[in-house]
Image 1 (cartoon, rainbow, N blue to C red):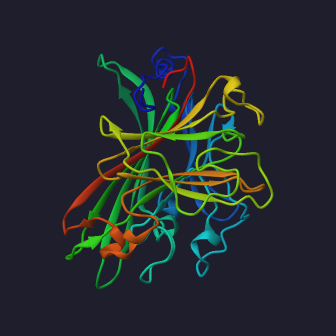
Image 2: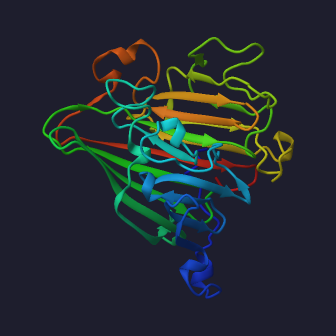
Length: 351
C-alpha cells in the first residue's frame, strides 16, 4: 500500500467533541531561527511526522521526527559557511535537499554542483491549516500546508519558478512535497531536478537495505571490497561512498517507490531492527516527471547516510555530455507537476 494512501486515526474528532479547544493543540506551526541564523517553520502534528520547513533553503525539509525518532540525516558541518563555498561545504543535510534547476551532479557548464535551489530563499511564504475529507465526506485529519515560490532567474535569460507546497497531517506518518515547475521566460530551457532525500541514524542500522521497484542497481564506480550498492555494513572509519543508478523505474498509479528496510524506528533505539517491529521508511515520487532513481550510500563513521534520489535527468555518465546535460526541456509558458513524499510503515499502524 502507498504511504500516502491510508486514512488517519481521526485526531480531528478531538476538536469536534470538545476535548481540544484549538487546532494548534493538535497541529502547531512555530516560526523559529536556527542556531545558524536561518528561518524555520517548525511543524508538529499529533500522530504524524514533525518536520522543519526551511524558507531560506527553498522550502526544503530539515530535521524530521516520527514517534520520537529522527528520520533525517544531519551532516557533520556545524554551520553553513555561506556564499562563496561549494555545495558540499554548505550541505547541512535534512530530510530533503532539492537539486537543480540549473544542474544536478558535478559542476557543469558554469553551474555549480547540484544547482541553486537548496541555497535560494523562498518568497511569498505562507502556511495554513485545513481539515481533510474522508471517503464518506466527513471531516477527518488536520492538515498543515506550507507554500511559497522559489525563483531561479537571470536578468536577460533563464526564468524558472518552482511553486512549492509542503503537506503534513495528523495521524499520517508521512510528509509530502508538491512542486509546480514553471518556465516564465521567453526561451526553452533544460531543467534538471533531483530530490535528495537524506536518511541517517537511527532509521539506518547495519543491514538496512534499499529496495526499489526498478532493475538491479548499477554502481557509478567499482564497489569497495565486500560491499554492495544498497546494503549498509557496520560503520567503519574511512568507508567509501557508493553512488548507483536504479534503471527502469516502475510505478503504480503514477507513483514510483523505494523502501528502506529494516530500520530501528519501531524499537525507538539505536539497536532496533527488523526484529523491533519491522518498520520501514518509504520514499514515493511522481514517476511521470521524475522517471529516474539514484542512491548514495556512505557508511563511514560520523557520516552514516543514505540518499534516495528521484531525478528527471542523468546524475552521472555520458548522457550528461548531451544538450542541457541530458535534462528535459521546459518550453516557455510550460509547467511540470512534481512531487515526493517520505513516510514510515509499521505493522498494525495506518499507512
